[in-house]
Amino acid sequence: MKSRKIYNRIALLRTEKSITRKELAEKIGVNFQTIGYLEREEYNPSLDLAFRISEIFELPIHIIFSTEPLKPISELLNSKE
Amino acid sequence: MEQNKSLSRRRLGVIITFLSLFGIVSIFEYGISQQWNGILKIAEFTLLLIFIISLVLTYLKTGLWKFTHKSLAELDEREIALTSKSLRYAYAIFTIFLLILLFSYSIFDYRLSIVLVTSLILFAHLLPASVIAWTDSK
Figure 1 (cartoon, rainbow over the protein chains, first blue to last red):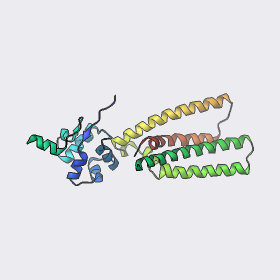
Figure 2 (tube, one colour; figure 1 turned 30 degrees about the horizontal axis):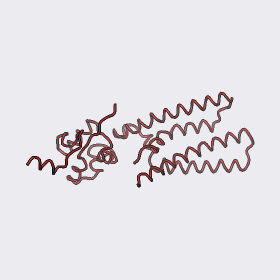
Figure 3 (spheres, rainbow over the protein chains, first blue to last red; figure 1 turned 90 degrees about the horizontal axis):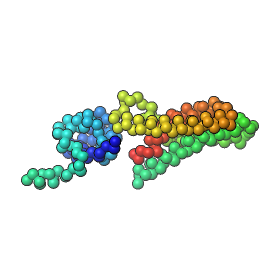
Figure 4 (cartoon, rainbow over the protein chains, first blue to last red; figure 1 turned 90 degrees about the vertical axis):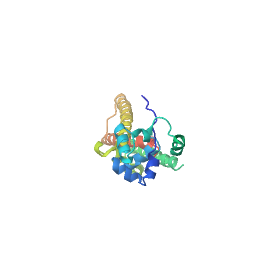
């Protein structure tokens, strides 16, 4: 079965937290190259890895990952106002 | 652009490695069946040198050899998926190649030389890394 593409906000959140790919990789226990693959959405993480990422960013999993293309944060904030 | 260059370079490295390995076996088999002479010895030595250089540049320096020979505990989930895929392809390629080779040898009543067997072992060990070098764009 072909899996669906999973979109994510990892790059944005990592920049916001000012952490490098290597630091994030060490925190979640993967190779730093895997962070690059995740950020480019070329690799779908397992549920366990997705949870570990959400724990690092202290955000619910559905805020970070989606099966639909993610809207920019500014657009989300505007729609709430 | 840089990624395409890197991929082309890696593919070229894989081709050179396998061609030189094939050349080493072919010249050895020819030398055994006919008569070893100076030209054949120089050609064999040159191919061996090309094989070693290509092996170092394409597999050892890039970390591909180490990557496909690491224990699963040292790999993350993406790397396990990647090595699993490469091993699956390598297994299929090696099985088909070996079947054709052994079938041909039995038809033509050739004997397997130690150089051929050694090359086949090397070929089997190089294949998973070669699949990654050939397919993975990064």
